[in-house]
Image (cartoon, rainbow, N blue to C red; front, side):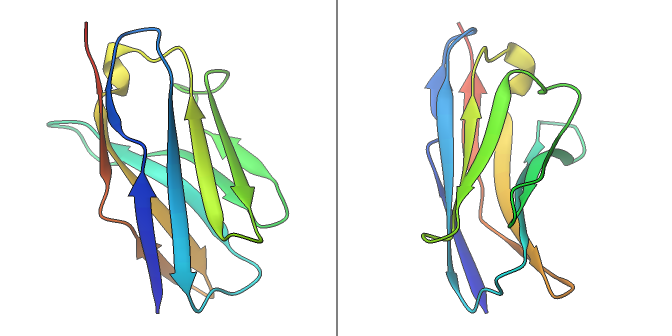
Length: 115
């Protein structure tokens, strides 16, 4: 079993920055994908970014150039650096880990962008 714990959400003004962390624990296979989805009020959950264990990354068009995903394999932790935040980035951000055909999810952390 794998457990994921997110941290780093909060309230920020437009143009500001936040850094989310996702710490994984449990039985973690060396090859895996970690990433972030988000769900805004009244909208479907959407993929924000993901990073493969060897470092390849992928981003949603809406965040490319503003968000950066990274990971520390030794610590089984993924990070999402979010810069130039916009009102539309307001959502609950969920960390996930995919390995051996299984998906694991964190409980989510709220990011609110508001002036």
